[in-house]
Length: 167
Image (cartoon, rainbow, N blue to C red; front, side):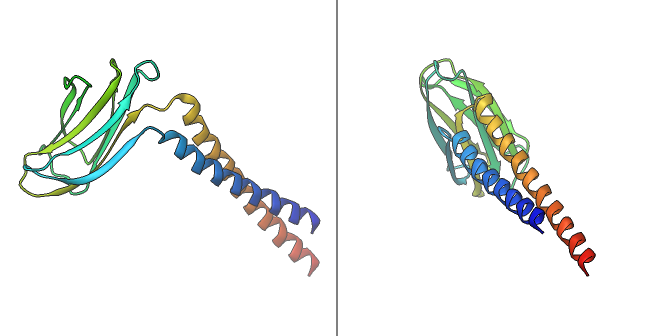
């Protein structure tokens, strides 16, 4: 029964550590990413701004999710600090995520427009692309979490087997 207790404690500890790392990893990855939501229609646009330092990051990323998606009525564009278009395209799916080059230091803008009179809720984010180290923290936390859950299942099976033997 002592092995069961140790297995159980270690598994729970791994799950807790995995959850803490998962939360911290998400906060680190989303650091510098500006998010927003709003209604978009012919008369309303959604604009999100984010500051970039070209020496720190050469690639930016944006994501857009449209709640009641309708094909080819939404467009998105990224403007650099000089108001020049970096990217401009029609949105052809409910959720998109794209990268763009950050050539100048300053405030970049993500602008979402619609050709529909109907107001549709849109969620969007704009920020620097997380580096490989930040992304790896997310993967590590998932592996630790899964290991803890497998250990918890193994501890449960071990406990049931020992209970059956003692009867």
